[in-house]
Length: 329
Image (spheres, rainbow, N blue to C red):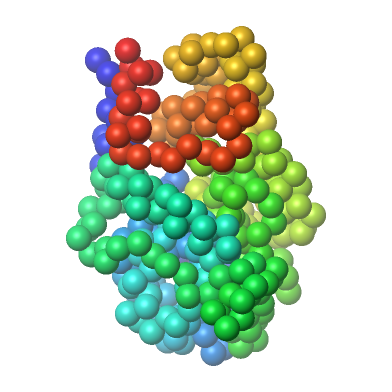
């Protein structure tokens, strides 16, 4: 019997945790589902990663309202994937005035946002239960790295003052996508990494720049964070635990890409490349959340990159199913 496609069989609700990491920083996590971060200042609030739907975002907003009545002014899109961004309209309805993303993320929304939206909805039916609440693609109002201030674009880095706490945002390098953006609260040493870092969960690399990713992780390590909200998995507290999450992600990326290079060099087909990769990945990562979901997309991307395809091919709902069927044959 073939496996259910992606996460179509994953229908059980996850336990949500909303925990305070420092005087101003909070983590919203859910047993391996996509995480969000919250930074609460004396004047404004920022949310990092908007959740998959406005209906889902309302749960996070309700939890924020249990601890603060300050206005939610900023929403940061750490990258373009639908499960991270399509809930943004709920915060706009709450009064958020700025949706922030990098130039790379903006370009990826233009290039493949519509295809990614449909692809991810098919992959994650539980996360998109209330898809009818999504008004369409999420577009940033402020672009970091765009350079044209008259259009709300901000070159290089952006720092916002929420009142008593400053948040720095920039793209530390290629990795999960070519537009990844972090939020860094330097005074409290808290890092909001998006999917550049995961812990004890599948590391989705279907749109990744695998060769560059380890160097980006080292740039994050150099921050010497004392807490991190990863893209998936529990929030990590203490520098040793932060490094544990960085090491976990790096091991996944490096093992995957090494296997992809070996498969490409041997001119394997995709199914053989998957079997080859499993020998290295299954014993280490086979137990983690959404491992079976991620691995087919990851192997496909690693093989492509090893073959010289630097700009990831666009995943469509049709391509998803074709790839999955080829691996089940």
